[in-house]
Length: 456
Ligand SMILES: Cc1cc2nc3c(=O)[nH]c(=O)nc-3n(C[C@H](O)[C@H](O)[C@H](O)COP(=O)(O)OP(=O)(O)OC[C@H]3O[C@@H](n4cnc5c(N)ncnc54)[C@H](O)[C@@H]3O)c2cc1C
Image 1 (spheres, rainbow, N blue to C red):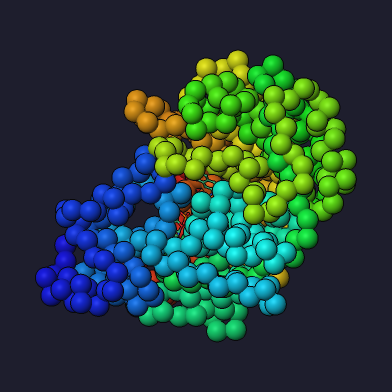
Image 2: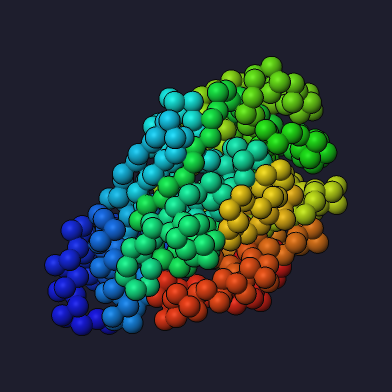
């Protein structure tokens, strides 16, 4: 496992906490948002600083162990077994520079803190549907949020990453200092190192218009078909998605969604309210909604567009991409997950991509998935006894949509599959991985995928 001497040195060097895998407090320290995943690390380092992260990485390398990192556990897909787990929840520094329209945040910061600090200055971060998600994991996995079709992935606006690499050193990596590593870390999450801080641009956002329109089971098919025709006609200032939801009869589920199959149309528009109302008008007329919250809103309140769960829960998430959404693809969705099917799924989401998401970043990066016209994300509840069927059921939805999939995906939606990247980027990532992390301290190979196209 590890030597007593190195364990003692780790305890001396780390200012945060060090917990042994079999000791008290480990289960709580290693738990996160996705309670379906139970980590069993050999050691947890609750890091307080970049130096703590460096000490954890050196300890792992000396003892032939791998290192994993967790901020919030929103992205936990597979259990960490026997590795050193670095948790970053104590690294909460947030600096917003309103004049320079930029932010620098520590590794444990969630989007809520950045929204609260930036929005009062008329600036927006490229955050996503839930402000409880961690900035660093989201951004280094790409990061597709409510301004994404206008401004691209969050990773496209990163200007520097402070990262601890496999040698235990902290580097400030930017296009100027190390272009190849800067390309790779923006899109591959923790495969090249653990980021201790991130610096990125904020975007001016004088006004925002958005919300959700929720339709009942009888209107699901009509609204889904209308969405498939309407969404591709929208300007880049609009982001939109539909989520076919099966939510339980629980107090924390908003009333219109409770215990029924519903379709939530989500809409966000970076522009004046009158134009936003005009753009969403056709969808409001397709059927009579159960609820409609679309209107002028503060960007700080974007959580109300998707109404994602805020409390930890057990779930399996799988994702893929579609190069188009013709009516045969809508038929396929309805066949496997429509209101007439009894299936243990919580959500099948189709998000419109395109616009700036389809263009290379100003400073190119390793973000996967630019070829998607829509992303498809499937979430299944994974509490026993559903845990055993959840992966198969989720993958079944992707398999049904395989004819329209380019075979690649988004790193952030669906875990760690290597099929996220196309062959050229995979080869480039592999070469760099061999050079900077030859002993695979951070895990994650870049071998071509063998899984069914579209499923990761
Ligand atoms: C409710 C919900 C809503 C979501 N909405 C969106 C959305 O709108 N758009 C979108 O793009 N994604 C979205 N996601 C996916 C989310 O971005 C990913 O799951 C992301 O990995 C979460 O990061 P985290 O740090 O919060 O999670 P964690 O589980 O703590 O981390 C996930 C992974 O991120 C990497 N990571 C975390 N910290 C570091 C670090 N310091 N250095 C290097 N790598 C690190 C690691 O690979 C880690 O395994 C959502 C997920 C959920 C559960």
